[in-house]
Image (cartoon, rainbow over all chains, first blue to last red; front, side, top):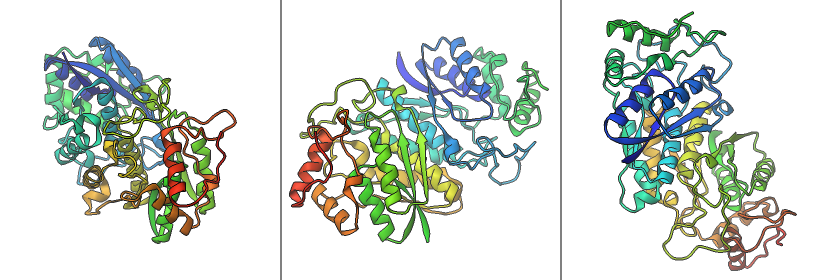
Length: 223
Length: 223
């Protein structure tokens, strides 16, 4: 089987991305981050999602993005109840996050001799994030081929973003089709102490709307 | 003054790069990494070099590249006495290292509203490293503009690599001219317990050869 690195956050999108990588015949090597995020429960979710798909090689990289600040997800500033809509970049945007994540994925790919990297970014629901755009992903592919030993040897890297053009409802339907256990996934930016999702933040709102549009009920507990 | 992010390892090259950034009128914000490297003394050197140039904003990001392995600098494999020469990529190459470093620098730049990043890479002495090539740096500039809020707003990022085409002797002469205190810098991959440089590794060999060619004596202690 062809190895591929799959970025796995523990959220719904990355779980479906992992399922798609498996469906497409790749042997997934999962990569998750602990980056001082408020929603550390996502890391536990990532582990369980990986296990549910029989991932044998799952690495957890500790990184500290709080050293720069600049986002409601890593700073001690309040997560807004709902700040999407309009053309503004949300305050939950973490500077250069996907660039950093893909850089680590590239290091991992180089070590395991993979040329395929899967990332669950989405340009529909996250149109405000510059690093979720197709042009960004193409630029990273270009960079990857110049940055690595394998690239020097002629290898082309592929950044797979299979959810890029899907709505949240379409992502959920795809996940159902591929057997994703959504009870293992977690998306809330600001979970309450008993670890139920808040139901109010941007991420919860998108998720709930997606399940509603897909004609399904989200199986995780909400506060 | 225009802010700029300067990647500062504590080695000779990055110290000269910092001096050049100051000479060119930038207000340097320094960024150093602790990444499980054997040569942790470099981090202490970075702090002292930053202080010697009056850097007021110096961040230290903890990152763990050992999670992937793949290099003599982060693994428990022996650093060779000298492995440069020829077209081979040295075993001291860390997968995707400069991609990861520049990604962090980009996050930092975004937070402090800088569009200039300085990195002390060199294409002459490190011709074996893919991520020290001019094409790589241009690709990262391209990526940076697509990856960020500022880029969406039309900002172009500049990756400055002022040492790119210089020999080690030329870098040392430039440093002398700009008042770099080389006693603060440290380059050895494999320092002996009393923290003297080994004098044998690739990095020591390059440094000693550079000082010799510049007609100078390296002021740091060797074992």
